[in-house]
Every structure is written in C-alpha cells, then in structure tokens.
Amino acid sequence: MPGDPAPVRVNRAPVLTLWATVVAERMGHPPDLALSLGSVVASTAARAKARRLGIIADAPRTAREPARRDTVRLLGRDVALTHDADGVVLADAGEGTPAPAAPIAAYLAKAFGPRLAEVRAAMQELAERHLPEDLDRVGFRLYEHFRPEVPADVRGWGAKGTLDLAKLRNARP
Image (cartoon, rainbow, N blue to C red):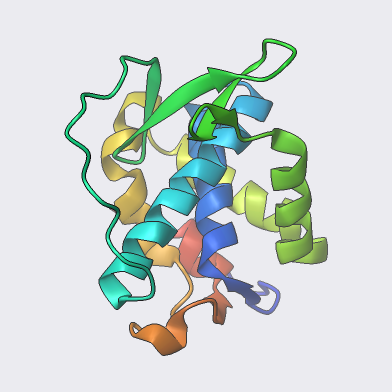
C-alpha cells in the first residue's frame, strides 16, 4: 500500500506467536486461549529449528504411550490443552503446565512496541480473507510468505529481521 510506514524490525518468534494467536481467534478460540496456543505453536517451531541447527539435541524418544488429552489443531500442529488453577482452558506448555496469557501479551507488546496494534490489524485482515476451517491448512504457508528474513543458519537464531506490512497484507498461500 503506498504510504505504508517503515517496516517493523522484529525477531521471527513474536511474529509467529502473534500470527498463530490471530489464526486461533479467527478459528473461534477466546483471546486468552488464543494467546496461549500461539505461544506454544511458536515454541514448538523454535525447538524444531534449534534441533535442525544443532543448537539443542533431539529429545529422547520414550516407549510409553502418551496419555489421551484434548488438543487443538493450529497451523498444522496438535497442541495439548490443560487448565489453570481457576479452571480456564489454556495450551499445555509442557507436562501439564498451562501457558498463561498475560506474560504472552506482555512479550508481544515488548517485541512490537507501538506497532503491535498495526501489525495485529494487518494479520487480522489477512486471516479474515480465509475461511476459519482453511487456516490450519494454509496458515503456516502464509506465515512463511511474510515472516521476517533472517540468515538460515545459526547466525539467524534470535536475529531481528524486517516485517514488511505490505508483504503481510498481500500474502498468498
């Protein structure tokens, strides 16, 4: 769009967290659960990339069958659900520990600063162009189209890149 402000400098993790949150909301999940889901999806993606880069070792495989749990499918990942002390349904951050929404919201506010509302609105516009039931299938490919560019190797780990809002608004799966 002509006249768009300067691109946003940000790490990929908060971009994926916010995008997964917006997609979860579009799929009908309440805001706190959406934030929780977004955080776990981004954490899962970060751990997978860290293993590919050799930053962390592969998790040992266990022979026991995992307990049956309620899950939500988001951006191609099944995210286990749990409850906080008040009984609120949230994403499981690991071993039954809920991922609370407030710290995730603070993390996004810090990462995007005064541009958070603007970036969120652009993501919401993109999500609204797709049926909720299609977003699980195409949502991650959309993210790959607009995510900030950083070096593909270890040098890119944690590096800030440029989030171009025009590219975000024009993303296609």
